[in-house]
Length: 297
Image 1: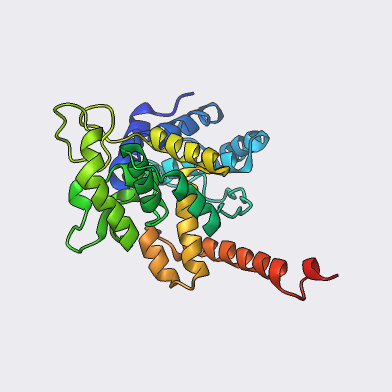
Image 2: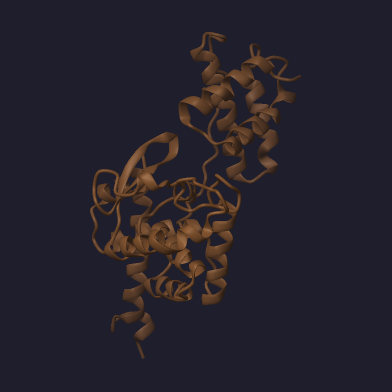
């Protein structure tokens, strides 16, 4: 039986407003909640047994899918409890499937240099591609943060600094390195105007093909992946963000400073990159140290 539609819509609306979630994320939440409808007669009458049966049925799916679907249902019932619609949360005692921790993919410094070489052409396309690499790798931005940058976010109070609006509409300020700042200045003075469609006066840093709209997320993926193919490297834009964090920590950057630049709410999330950096250092030692197994005769 369908969950009470008015409550479902109210819950999704609060997620949009209070957490600043995207349309795509909200649609995914709604879809996950729809999978639960066959396991309860009413949101007001759901029991822990209903939740248990639902999760048993989800066992055919990947662990991440199971965890995500439980999270959607749990969030909905937490909302109902807070609003006084129910007296007990039926999901309270349901264990969350444990997701094996996988380390984020990070590129080597040589791979980053190869990618930058693919963007060495002097035309507007090459300059925009260099800017993409300098801001995703050089500043650790998420793709969504990057495409939504406006001209007013540049040097917003501090020279060579970007004002970035992250998840939950949280604002942070990220420093630009000298090379990144130089590339950005050159792009603004030359190439950006060539990407504006006629009569478009929008202030997007990266204007798209549609008037008043920024470059799309999909197009950024295409540009980065095309550059990767030219360099012989399999890559997606988020790998550049991972590499930004890993390279900073490999060079002994302060963990909390990296956390602030990435816009992580929890330091635990940032600490994942210390494992990547540690693994990279171990691999380097095993490959080059005279006493490693690889170098023994």
